[in-house]
Length: 110
Image (cartoon, rainbow, N blue to C red; front, side, top):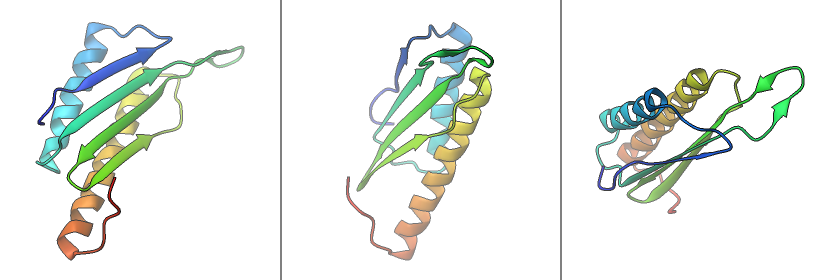
């Protein structure tokens, strides 16, 4: 990546293990697209539900040449499951983006 990964959290404090997990997964995205210019990750726990507990939202914004990809998955009670699902979706979007570039389909600019 051309810029370091930016990780921010809102209404939740992230442990060193969670931060390391986010950095490791962000670095793995370069396997699918080696032209990632930037990656911003937002982890938030907006409110506490009476019957469910804390729900974690993970949002990933990737900047690649010619596009800005945004991933936002459904919230989950387990932080690591929310992270895994968000990065799995980001991986799928990058693969789809690269496929469209190779085929020559028009990519909408950011």
